Amino acid sequence: MELLTSILAAVEAQNTRIATLTEQQKKLAGFVKVMDEETTRRLERIIAATAKLAREVTVIPEGKRAERVRQPLQLDY
View (cartoon, rainbow, N blue to C red):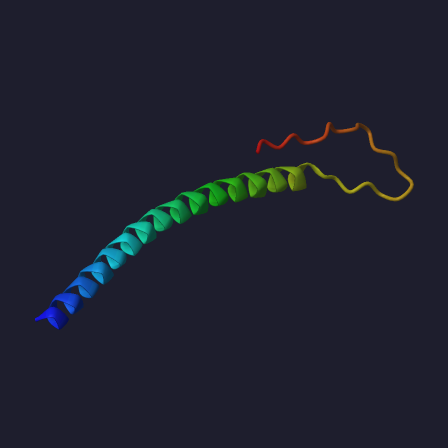
């Protein structure tokens, strides 16, 4: 009987540990999701800014001067 009580206590302790790990995994998955969404938003802003800059760049033929100087692009982070 003592052996069964000891085994039961060990199983209950293991179940408690599994429940704790499950909760930690859920929290971590939520954190990863939020970080992924934020990273995606930042990447989309960078891509949009790069595309805008690429449209604004003009090729100046050799020997010609640029007619105007563009202001540096300001990125929001």
